[in-house]
Structure formats: C-alpha cells, structure tokens
Length: 270
Image (cartoon, rainbow, N blue to C red; front, side, top):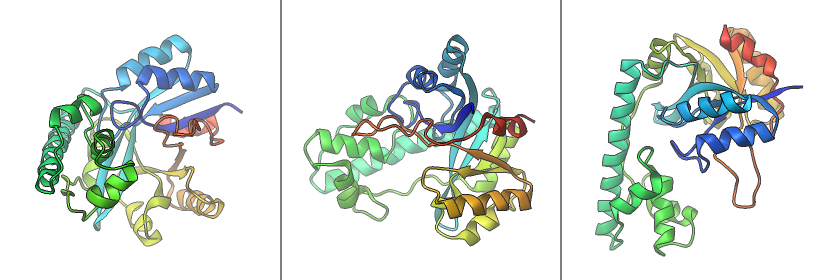
C-alpha cells in the first residue's frame, strides 16, 4: 500500500527539519505524498514543492491555523491553498506580528522575575517566522535558567504561568473562511486532542468545514472508529497525519508511521 502523511511541520514554524530535509526524509520512507502544514505559515511550501518535484514526492501546499473555541485551542488544517491569496497573507502577517509582540511581552515578564532573555537571540533561534513558547523555553534551557523545556513551561510559560501572555485568537469560523477563500479544503485537526466530544460535534457543523483528521498518533482505536463514523454521518472527507515535527530526542520518527492510504487523496483533491 502506498502511504501518505498529511500533517507535517518544518522549520517554517516549530519543526526541526527544513522543508528540503523533510521531503527527503519522506522519500526515504517511500511516502507517495505529504502535506506541509506549518503553524500559521506558508513560507516553507515553495522549497518543499521544488524538492518534491526533484525527488518524486507529491507535496500538498497546506497550513495549520491556530484558533480558539470556548476557551480551547482548536487547529484547522487547510489543503491545496492559494499561497498568493491576499486575505490569507494579510491574516498570516497579522499572526506573525502578534507572535513577536507576545514574545516581547513574555520576555518583559521574565525580566520582572529576574530572568534576562535577549529577544535577538530568540529571533535567531526561531528564525524569521513562528516565534513561540517552545523557542523561548529552549532559550531558557540554553542559558541555564532551567534544566528542560518542560521545566520552563511548568515554572514560567504554561497557560496562566507567571510569564504567560495571551495570544491573538482566531476563531474556527474565520480560519475555515480564510482557507475556503484561498481555494483550499478546511479540515478539523486531531479531534481527539479536544477535551469534549460535544465540542467536536459542534465544530463539524461549521459551514464550509470539509473534513476531519481521523488518523492521528494519539487517537485510540475507539476514537478512530468514532471519527470515521462521524465523517460518514456528516459527509466529511477523512484525512490523517503524524503531526511530525522532526526526530524526537531518542531518534524516533512519527513521519509515515500511520497506515494512511494514498486513496484518501482522491476526495481531498476533488
């Protein structure tokens, strides 16, 4: 069976591999197709497309938009988006600006706690786009303020923590509209991560939501079965992906670990 992976991250957001490296890794794993779905960013797509064309790996231009619904984070995946759509580019610029402002506010809060962190070093660590709490946590480790990234979150950066700052919040309806306006297909990401099944059932009723990510590493067999039934009931496209951000500390890979058939691409393309 030819396999695909429709949920992957690169250095354009919070992944550890460049788009070129990720496509090469997909080639090594004999994946027929992959989707680049960086958080609130499309800057890694062009390099991935060029590399995919050279290596014979189909690359789907995608994105993962961070939204909030009833005070809970809900991610919306977008596939086959027009990367030149003005409305999409405008929101992405707004999100990136908000990320940088948020990072500066968190650094200010850390300074008030006696912890000095340099914003320029944070930018260097994160790159031009996608500054987020994981980057700040890593910098706190690198500078010896904490032993691990988890400790950085536990002591300072977790929701409600002493250095936490609220982020600009996009609503699911806005994200779905943006993706649809950009000619893309909107899909609810990893529903099993959402706290309540009732919230998932509400979200799948949103106008222009076209699919649900049923195949996901953290979904139990029971959850997978439920989401497959829900997709059939609501006439939703079924997708799946590993949500790989690169090799883990012990060298393990999520890339291509799920048995997702290339046949799932047909309804997505239609």
